Image (cartoon, rainbow, N blue to C red; front, top):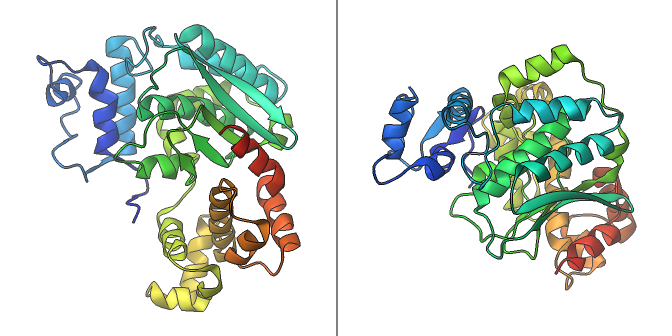
Length: 339
C-alpha cells in the first residue's frame, strides 16, 4: 500500500536531491551538515521529512551551488531562474501562451532536452524532445514536471489533473510520492517523456499580481508540493481500499465509515473538509483505472465499462468526458499512438 503522510516527503527523495552534489569526499550526511540541516536523517528508507524542511533543502542547495535543478543538467539553472520564468509567464493572457513562454525559457536553460506543448482535439501534452540516447533518472524528470506543472497550476489558481505521466526511464524502486504529487497513472520505459491533460485548461486566463508572485515564491517549493498534490491522507486510504475491490463490491458510505471506525457523519465531515466527498473519490479511482486500461488495446470499451461498474458503454463515455474533458477514443488514440 502507498505510504503517504500529508505535508511530508520521503527521505528517498532527499537522497535523490543530494545525489549530484555528493562525492567520495563529501557524503550526503556531511552535505546536510554543511547546509545546516542536521534535523534531516537518511538512516531509514521509510523515513519522512517535513515538506518545510525539504523546501529549505531545495533553497539552500540552490544558493550554495547556484543551481535550482539539483546539479542534474550540464547547464546550471542559476538562482533566480524560476522567479524569472514565473514573472514572464504571468504576463501572458492565457495558460497556453504562458506555458509556451515557460517551456521556451527552460529550453534555453537546459542542455539536451526541451519541452513542447501540443494540442490534439480535447487533449494536450507537454512532450520532452531529448538529444541524449540514455534517459535521465526519474528524479530529474519529476523535478522538471514539478516546475512546469506547479507553475501552471498556480497561474490559473487550481490543480490541473494529469491523465498520464510517461517517462523514458525505467521505474525506480520508489514511486509513492511521485504518484501523490502527479498522478497514479505513471508509465515507465516509454518511447518518450510527456504529461497528458485536458486541453480546455489551456484557454483559461492568467490573472496573477506581483504581490501574489512574491507570496508564491516565498513559499516555494513547499506550496507546490502540498497545495497542488492530488491526495489527502484519508482520501488516499480510501482510494487504496477501493483499488483492491471490483467496482460492484465497493462499500456504501455507511459501510466504509464502519470499516474506518468512525461514524458516517464524521466521515462526511472529514471528506468535506478536503473537498472530496466519497462519490468524488470513487470517480477518481474509476478515472485512474480507466486511463490505465485504455492503454491496453486488448480491453474493449464494453469490458472496460463493465469493470468500472457502468451499465453500458454510453454511460462510461459520458463519465469519462466529464472527468477528463475528452472521450475514451481520443485518449486511447493518443496513448497508443506513442507506442
